[in-house]
Amino acid sequence: MDESHTQQRIAELSARLEEAEETLRAVSAGEIDAFIVQGPRGEQVYSLRSAEQPYRTLVEEMQEGAAILTVAGDIVYCNRQFAALVGIPLEDVIGRPLDRFLSGSDRMAFAMLRKAGSGKCRARLIAAGGRVVDVYLSLSASKSEDENERLNLIVTDLSALLDAQSGRDRAEQESQAKDEFMAMLAHELRNPLSAISAAVQVLEASNGQDAPALRARSIIGRQVHHLARLVDDLLDVGRVMTGKIALDRRPIDFADLVHRAVAVCGERQNGQRLEISSQRVWIDGDLVRMEQIVNNIVGNAVKYTPGGGSIRVRVSAEGSDAVLRVEDNGYGIAPELLPRVFDLFVQGERTLDRAQGGLGIGLTLVRRLVELHGGSVSALSEGPGRGSTFTVRLPKVAAPQNTQPSLTQSPCAGFSRRVLVIEDNRDAREMFRMMLELAGHEVLEAEEGLTGLELLKATRPDVAVIDVGLPGLNGYEIARRFREEPDAERVMLVALTGYGTPEAVERSRQAGFDHHLIKPVNAEALQEIMRGGADGAPGAGAGSGGVSPNGAAGPMSAAASGNGAGAARAVGLRI
Image (cartoon, rainbow, N blue to C red; front, top):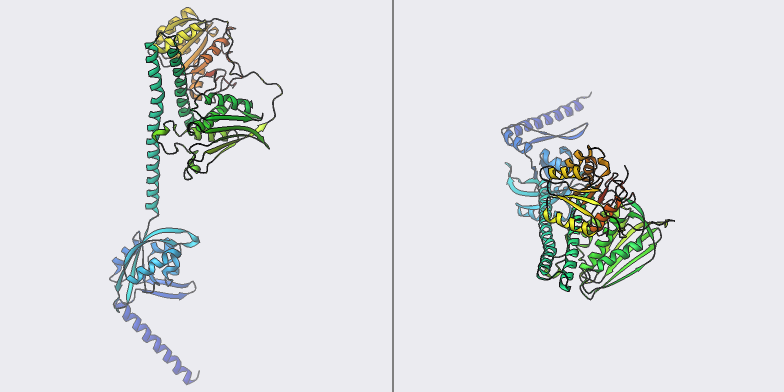
């Protein structure tokens, strides 16, 4: 190696030594915060321990992101939380402009903040992979020991706060919806109760046979039917939302079903023109549930169409679908409400002139029941005051070769049974007795469980109708004890209850009942059960071709009146 090259090498080493000595001086003077070292893994940042270590630890461990910027907005330092927010390794963050991590619409606002030297603002960070993080930026200015100005940035992640706020808003909306639902429920129940109360007073003031009395009886019957439907809807919406409804499906003449349902809804008309046109088409469905669907949709049109308006009901076959369309020129649906019209408790504006607004559960039931049948339902409206159209589409099926008589036909009369009624409610027991005696049956009565069981054993009636919620001895225990008696199977036992769930029906079956009768009782449903026992065979009552109202399974019936089916909502499916 020649002398000149040696001298050059010594000079280079001397310069590097001087640089190292100056670095050591700067480190000991606290002028250097960190080293950026170029190595095999690229540039790496190494922080220095100094007298400021407690403060560095505080910044490094804080939950908020922290960064130090140049006045131009370049990052010269950041803590681990800031790196975690943007989803990039800490060493890759340093040296980049902060704008690289801000959404485009927030960069101008931050530039103004940076120019002012301090301030706060909301912003969105664009993290790795395009993830957006809502944050709150707090900026302040300071000077380093070399008098260079720098900007100190604190970044607060708002995600948890916004999630909590959103959850609170949803809870408040749900609470408000439930409050409105309860208010409307009270209103809906008071309307028929008021009419019933007034009708009873008319009956008391008349001789019971003149025109006002006949009209009062008609009103009582209609309003009780309305109350029963409200209760049915309240019970059904819970079951259908939790998937506890099973369908008793059979071929149904859809046009015939719609005609019958429209006739029932027509009784509630208030001066509207109700037109119906139909093409015969068959579907595979549950008769009771299909009537519930049609009654709710047509009834909805009647409610929301003022007097003088028109309602058109059309049934047709379109391709592989059976289609029901109900069009009206009534109040219409607001655009913001239209996407949610089938949601639970959702309704249009409730005003005093639209007192029949309902409970906000009918269309929810419609959608779920239609979906259970493999169909779809939709709503269209051009806005308030421009009417609405509801369309139900169901898979059509071929017409059956041999159609069976409808279960809604009135049962035959001309037979008499001896019936024991065990019921602790005096008014209900009296009405039962009157209904049965008017139908030609002999009636015995008991008002509590122990007396009822002894009378049941002593008289051995053809049929015993037993309220399950009796004082002294409940109805289930009466049935269990009586079934232990000799020849007890010759007596038909009918459970009387307000519960129609599958669990309630199964409990009745296990106790020994042949039928499950749901309050309020329809006279035709009761008569159908009486007729079923005319041959002395308990459980033969309504036959195996009936309609299960609640998805109940078992060799027993479940009958009630509240769904508008017109007869027994009856009978058990074989398990």
